[in-house]
Length: 77
Image (tube, rainbow, N blue to C red):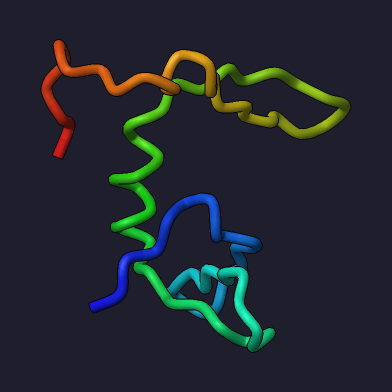
């Protein structure tokens, strides 16, 4: 198994019922697939601020709150 650092992720695209995650590599099609259930687990770790812009609601991750690991809180999975 190969470990992918989050710094290497370059794109995320839906692909039928899965999500394709592109990574920086010499090959443009290099990447991997994850399920929508795995993405739910990942996104559940973040806090979002939701604001309305015209007709859609957009979520923004509060990244500054997650720069340091929060050891005092239990994992949600």
